[in-house]
Image (cartoon, rainbow, N blue to C red; front, side):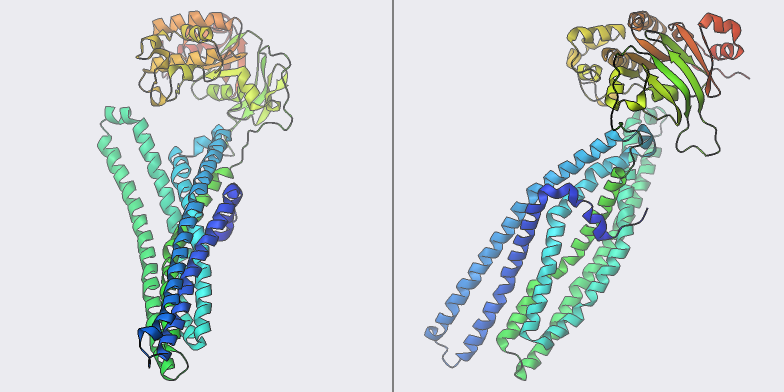
Length: 596
């Protein structure tokens, strides 16, 4: 990917900030106006000093007051206007910046929802979290203050230098020659600071990932007594981030040193030159006083170059990190003209399906190497195979969580790639072995796939999944079950996930070993209740237990990336040696037994 420059990178954010641009522009004009008011004051004082000097031979109040009063009033007026402009600038830019940040956050979140599972398999969640919080906040601050002050201060410096030249070109040239190295220093700072700023933000993302993983895995860490180890690792990572931040601080401090010393040096030399020019009659005392006052006004715009440059470069890296996500291709898309399933019956067909993960080596064979399987409407098929044979991957292809690399999956005769993802997933529901719940109420979790379901449908789904325990929770169906449902047992989470799939009332139900965490008695009750659902629903069930196999109408054996046998459980036991091996390798809990 071609690397963009600072300006080109920052310009990419403005299409997302169109609504805020008018107020940002007006805020910039207000900031420029405030600075112009400040620059106008030395001109009045120049006239005052020169006028008083001419009247030194009449130093009476009656001679000085007519000169002094108008100037004082003018200075007070300009000062008041400057204060009003500053307030106006803040009022104009504060609110739109927050709207832009909210819009960017919505855009990023929508993109994350649209990106395929393969993207989320590769990206650490902490990196995404840091982009959605810290980076977008930094962009908002830059839009509200950084770019406004950077433009306003740059204009002020240019206008101020022009005014210095208008007083005396010799004095202006002396001052400009001495301060000109600041631009070279600023350019070098930008070049070196960018890499350090990027490293800092990436390290912050890694640190966020570490925090998230340790919080989610707190039970494992405590169970194995590894809290101290993970704490030490986190401390080392935090120390690396601290070192990077210190490097940034030193770079900014070095820039501030130049920004503080060079203007003072320029002022001192200009003062000596100015006195000489006054003595030779080439400059008036009032002009010298105004020159010095203007350099004081320029002090803030020049001093601010340091933090404005660092903020701008930090914003550049934040924009880069934001667009790294937005530029990710959505490999699983809706068709331009989506087809419709005229009559949803639930016939699911895998035709010559091949699949290989994107990050797999090129020489590695396809995980699924020509799968052919047909599920008739209302038929339940148990999918069985050794560990790593691709059972879970095959079920994920049915809802386009992953995309087939060759072949096709058809729902009632329609290639699922011709359907919109929303329609496809309204006809096919999944229950995963690793049951994920959300920090919401039981009702919201169960009705996630069918929010308009009736109370009767909700109760039926809970009954089928043997999840009546929810009625004993403190607030019943309205009980919030905590982050990822970790306040519940594994079996309880699985039952709620199964109830969620059943409540969706799909034409096709895909169950990826959703009963693995249940005890034998509960599993038997769930299977008995499931039979009523499976009479009217097509079901593809990944089976890791002999009892689950017997729940299905027929069994499909996945071997070496293909379906090598399909039939009834009893028939396959008699006719297929590999099937007997797989079944005999499963213990009662559904785990593979090592067979030498």
